[in-house]
Amino acid sequence: MFGYINSSQMGLIDNLIITVTKDERPQADYTVKFVDELGANIKDPVTRSGAVGDDISLILGDNAPLWNGEKTQKYIYKSDDAEGKKIASDGSTVVTIVFREAETYYAILNCKTEDDAQLAQLTGSFFEGESYNIYPARGYSKGGVYYFSPATSYNGITYKFPGSIESEIIDGKTTFVGTLTYTEDNTVAYYSDIERLALPVEDAGNGTGLGQLVGSADSWWSFSGGIFDRFSQGRGVRLNAESYIYTEPITASGVYRVIIYGRNDKSSDYATPYELGLRDAEGNVTWFNSLSIPSWAKAATGNNTVENVIIPAGSSLVIGYSGDRNEISFDDITLKKTGDIETATVTSAGWATFVPTANVTIPDGVEAYYVSAVSTTATLTQVETAIPAGAPVLLKAAEGTYTFTQAASAAAIDGNLLKISDGEAMNVLVLYNGDKGVGFYNWTDVLPADKVYLDVAAPGRDFIGFSFGEATGINAVESTKENGAVYNLAGQRVAQPTRGLYIVNGKKVVVK
Image (cartoon, rainbow, N blue to C red):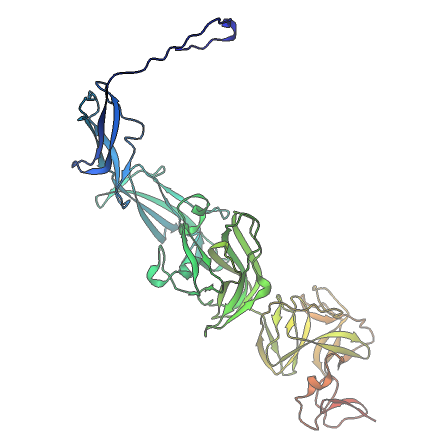
């Protein structure tokens, strides 16, 4: 044996002789058996060898827990008879290690509100000597109200058993009971685990599957460790190409903030080719290509937020995959209502002002215009197909209320002389149906916030009527009028025209 020599003891060694002696004693085999308490083998016996007459010593790992082939039963070391046994020369020595069945423990996690109302009860089981994770959903609903876990970020909740919980005996079983308190969030209008939406009804997992999957999924991802512990229920869902999942019908029309949680499984930043859409009661889906979900950083969990999504009552929000390779695992979806749905009411005058909060499609029966120039009249230029978010326009339609749905995109309006008030006193022109017909009339008082006005110098201009720009084409604007009808430039029918410019059968006519 060599001892440690510190620096003060160092000296010069002239000669060092190491002698190795070979153990030439006779060798023999012996057997190690692994059995349960009834003596049945739970692992194949192991044959080892050693010098005849030596004491038998078990090696590291001989007393480690064992499992049956189906992994349904765990065995824990109980005892062995190795002490005092020596290796016999005829190979007949047998050492038996006895294992007992590990006790099965049970876990219960009660998810409750702050006033102790039960939201969900999640259960599981695990073997003695093990730990067990329950992954509750981030949110639950009760009585039309949504409650969320204390997690302050996507890192979510993992409830680990047994932890510091003391066991108790319930129905003769060793049970660990934990409680997680959820807080009400009245800003949430809808929440769901995505796997709950996708899973078939008959394969609901830890929740009630709705089977609301069109196409197919890559797989039902069940995670038991690592970053995926952060998924509620420990699960996530990937979609195959041309597949989509949809929510239950949203009960209240409105403008929503959509928050989708998930994980990028690629090794690099990834621009997610998932898209949002609406599914009506007949199953028709309209996609919003411009609302493709932005990228997640590589190997990270997080959320994507899409603002100003218009959802009519009775429609479902759709999450679809349009790429050729799926790399995102989705966990859950939250909708927060941020405003009422985009509607506009047109009075019997046939005109109204409108400012959408999101890009919207112009519905059938409605024409939209902006003011592109002002001289003796306000020149109206028609907006085609969709109105961009925040753009003030004039609507021309029959009397009624019209619903505007989300548009994938909308071309910008350049040179619009219509503006939006900020609630201050103004000397401007506003749309009105007065004694001179529909047009812009002078306003010299506080104009309520968010009202539309014409941005021209008002003094000396008590009224400005409409004319139509060449880009619009007056024929298209007035072509639905019956033959022979005469209209002034404000769009009002005139029974006895006097001198001036009029519209007859969709054409400009000068009466002298």
